[in-house]
Amino acid sequence: MGCTDGTRVQILDDINSWLYDPDAAHILWLSGMAGTGKTAIAWTVCSQADDNNKIILGGSFFCSRTTGSANQFDPKFVVPTLARSLALRSIEFSKALSAELARDPDVIDKHIRAQIQQLLYAPLLALENSDVPVLFVVDALDQCHDEFPANDLSNNAESHRIVAEMLSALAALSKANPKLPVKFLIVSRPEIYIRDVILAQAESIRVFQLDGVDKQLTTNDIRLYISDTLLAAPGLRSRFSSVDVEQLVGLSDGMFMVAVIAVRYILGAGVDVAVVRFRRMFDAARSNWVIDSVAVLDFIYHPIVLNALSMGHLRLTLDLRHILASIICSQMALSVGALADLLDIPIDELRASLSPFHSVIHVPVTDNQPSVRLVHSSFSNYLLVRAATEIRVSVVTGHEVLARACLRIMSKHLPVDSSQVFESNSLRPSQRLDTIALTLEYACTSWIFHITSIPTKSLRLEQKISAIFLPRLRSWLEVMSVLGCLQNAIAMLVQAAETVRLFSVRRRINILTPTCR
Image (cartoon, rainbow, N blue to C red; front, side, top):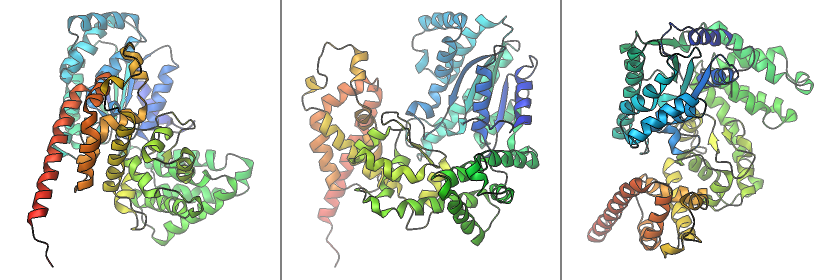
């Protein structure tokens, strides 16, 4: 996921100069629009720091709504994650952190300023005289949201407030002790709520904008990346020429993400199919040529999806668009096994249906690794908004499929008698946690989110809640307790009660309202 050797050299040199300069600002904000290669740069910085004994990689947090668990896009988990990571690498920091936690065990649940003060600043004082700087990396901070639905503007505003407060508190930390040997690399898009805080703290934060980098340098790096991959093997060099490389460089138009996805698509089905895919992609681009990165991505995405939908010989038991919608709407990255279980289809059929999407969907090799995810959010935007009608995916369909799947999984795995949830009541909490399958964890923690995300609920869905969930309420609470989610459970029950109430109101209105003929 890092930068190809020989690319981004000047940018990485500038970041390293900042990193090893003791008088430089403690915070560097690396900003850039989608597709400019920010995450690859962040990965490379982490990798280089991890291999260098002149610096301590204190920790990294790669925010993403399409990767891993909900903790990976909740801003409240950023600071605790960084503190825990450094505690595993530094004995001095670990001892100081333990002392802080002993004084205030509830600090993790406090507001972000208290977290930074007690989990980072106070323990970092133990390293005050160290000659080795500590680096923390936070990538894609703009993708951080709390556990509520991302399309809820009020909750987005709360997440934005937390992120802005975090940046202000980190700036205050650097002002409180300018000689503290710590550096923060913050990576994000130039969102207004982030930019405003950065500009207000200009004396404490250095700004590096990828959009301001000489476009020719970026184009040269893209050319090197494409050459190293498209012409990597003798079998490819006999099929592609330097002219083809330049065509792809032109199509990328300075956007690394376009080049990466295009190359993955071209090479995704092997050497023999590569030329056909290359020509198909350029035929689509030539017929509607525009110099716009979003449109260029669409020309790449269109043949990928058409190719997948044309594979009718697979005779899939579930509409492929339902599978894509479910991946888009899922609250966390699932394993292949868990996703197949939720969708009630065989694992081999799920893998077959996802195989044409190698370039845009990460599908792990093993069935139990929870990392099925979109490579980039632009693919989700394309499927939901810009794709042709016969290709377009419905977010409502995704929530409907997952809502019913969650209720079915709870019906299957949650007994009516809560005493039968775990085989033995003598199991320790950690042992009980290990017995909860990822599918059941997802169903128990996400079912009400999907139900409340459906604009119009059906009577059958209300009946399922009453018939499946209510008799298993105590079993569900037992599982939520073991997962450490009891506080969330209370909020979910309130939402569930309101949802059932609205069902009943709508049903009465439908009964009382005469049918128009």
